Length: 420
Image 1: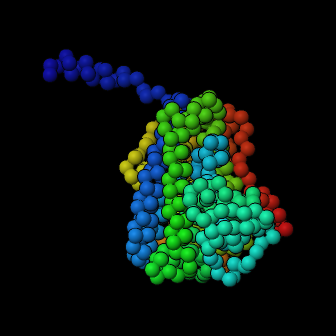
Image 2 (image 1 turned 60 degrees about the vertical axis):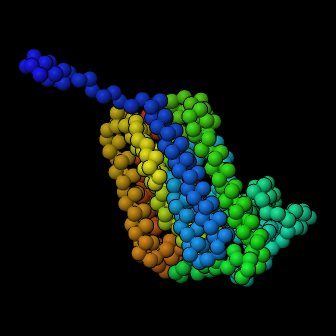
């Protein structure tokens, strides 16, 4: 190459146009792409769970039960990273109850320990036990449950009697079937259902054929529900259209509504502070499997995903691009640094909680009465969430968006009401 060309290249390099700041439209596109990748991962992982369930049914061994539990956890973890899409996106929030409603009155589904009790003033279906009863007569209503199908679960049992605790579908119903009740309170140990509960030839717990029907029906229904949401976030899908119709400001408000509401009212409040105040293992999110530390951790990762415009897929469907973080950096670099520091501090607090769980102390033990050190670890995570929410509120103002009402929680806003 001659010296003239080299000189021209050097001169050109000096005048390269600097990269333009991200636009709201670009940020919203990546926000949609992250959702699409995550829901597609969920669908694929649910299909893997179905394969594991089918293997358990074909050969009901302890090894196959453990494999099905591992597949459930692998399917569960990426779900929590999508929860930052709730609250701001009505299409997600309206659908969420199908797959993640909790807590559930497990006596609706299957046999329970005597300590569970026989009835509840709030729920006539409290011990309906659909697995043991092909016909349910409850509160003057008769339900034909002769064959347990996805339609029966979705249309007749989910929120039966308009009681939210009647959770018949989704991750937690499947979790209960795979683990059974956790009867350990705040002592060590998760649910311990035997594999023979799924073995018609050596049946424990009774009604093994119907328990198999329920497990397979719930798994099939989970897949169809995830197909619905994956399609909604595909290019041209209903969720993308709904987001686009809000315009740039409305779309950015949607992102921040999801971040703030999950951070404050839902995670810090309803899922964590409430259980800590009551020292109640029944307030643990993944209470049968003792996977709660991962559910909470992945919620925090999901908040980061939508802010930083990135998704690290367990299946290789990574996404990254223009982000809300870059818009804040362009508008107010000092606030951008603050927001990143707060998100990093929260992640560190949840990593500490996760490490404690992986070291042998499950989340339900951490919130137990008298466990001062465990309580402090959980409280530190709650405090970090509250602190980062204050910075999210400042981001809303910096971007000159309309005031956003984040989800609240009595456990944070009116603690005395919890004990009334």
